[in-house]
Image (cartoon, rainbow, N blue to C red; front, side, top):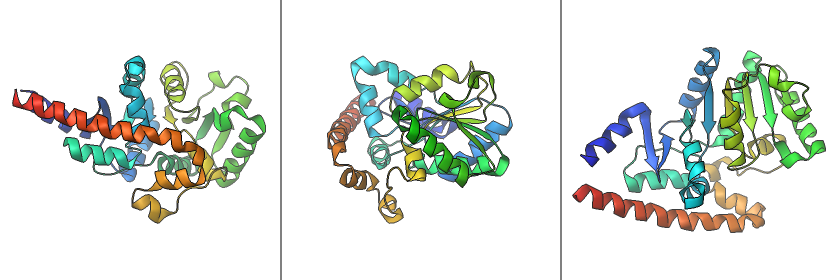
Length: 254
């Protein structure tokens, strides 16, 4: 019975599940098409980008609120090669990494093409001068889109936005997005982390071939050595995945 339920879940909306968090099995073209369609139809859309660090944090007993938040997403992107690896181990239908940074860039191209209003919140960790510089660079790169930092926009809560990027960091941005999507005039909110930093030159991104082979995380560690403590989550993630595999095998036999 458990096996049949799991199979039925996988076939529902092309979803997999890793450590209790729902993940879309998709690719970037399908994601961008789906978000565009939902925006022009006026459908509210919550977009999250879980990676192994997210799932480790969400698996801790005191952070089950975060797991519940992640599972509220209309679109949950496998933003990390570790999720693809875990899906293979667990027999889940997630075959391709969809980097949040690539989706952010694709959405900004759509915004430029269709003249969307785009809000940004939490950029550059609250540094006002850097935030304003970032918005200026984005506005120059995508001149047909109307891009603004919500913190610098008077009465932004009463205005309509096609898309908002929440950049406050893991946990905080997802909580903000879930709390504000349905009570404000926002069609889509995406948890973007530091993705805008790549597009505006505040942070270097790994060359394409490094991203292609799944070592973007290692490149970021080389250019930002302070991130080494965050890599501990990868070890924990591996252990949690194998633990889940053992539990699944045991439940299947019952």
